[in-house]
Length: 463
Image (cartoon, rainbow, N blue to C red):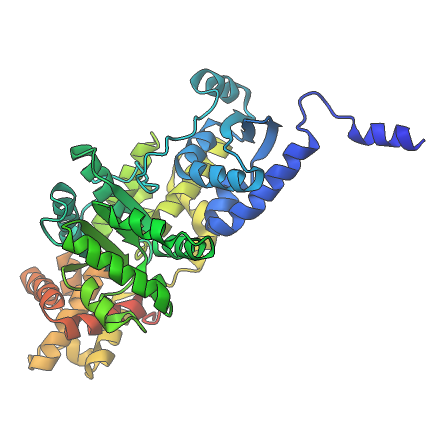
């Protein structure tokens, strides 16, 4: 009886995956869940199943070919890395669509995705290029500096330090630098590394007594791209290694690029000598995109997915997701996924349905709220800002409010003028230009502006 029960339990249909495959993919999903943002995991990976597993390959089932394309483009590297950790070897990954027509198209198009060559480029993401980086007023200077560095590494702006909030395009830019530099000079030794990965490499080198190899690897580079250096906070040993590697590379004429969520002087507990090195070249910031730029980002991303995004849908999303490009693109991803799964056309109604949970969490910033916040920061009243009085302090507060309304709400110059009692659009233009110039030239003013803008972005200026 026991044997019969065991045979019954283990019996499966020919097209069902075996238990080992199911367990492996369950473990892989558990690992991926903590590596990938929740929205991305729930939308794209939680709906996958494993179909087959061999010594060298795994086949995954997805809803349709759109999912297969998206996962291949955005998550395949993480999937391979997790599988390598779990089974101790590389597995090629292929997809099977649940939809029969999509399944046939996938079999015709690609039986399996090969493992990428290990070319020493430090996990550069080839999809991040300057051509697909949308340029606007908030990132124009940073993009120009990044392109100059890519074309002349070590000759201009060394080091280049790019800072800005989460999801504004810093990582995209550093990958674009590496990809463009290699396209011009394939012999360059380019390495991209997040500061956290750098820390883990250092720990492994200490444990295995291979610190000399660790140092030699980095000191031989022509172009080092280090992401998220705010991770250095509180790690003295790590800061010391970065300091010495920086000196070696800089002295040899190699290019160094850093990204961070704040300028070097504002990174807490950072050694003064390292802060001085980080800020010794060109320091540029990336700000949140304005309305026109957000619409352009959405349309370009939709085009890359071979989707035509109606303007009214792009405007609906862009006018509601304002401060974070990653959230903006994530909103579009959810919309495209729902459209694909339900076979419904892209429309404002579908966007409202798709994004209602996300948008319910996003505070609605108004011009009045921005004016109130600027008035409080500069020690005046909102009524004073809207008046025609022209004291120096009041004029600057008014100009800051105009600048932040333009930046956060993307209103036209004429619309902003109406918020201030019908000011002429040239007055608003002058205000925006003046604040932007002060932001670049006056660091104390820039820090004050960032603090105010951050409060507005977090919803602390909501009416």
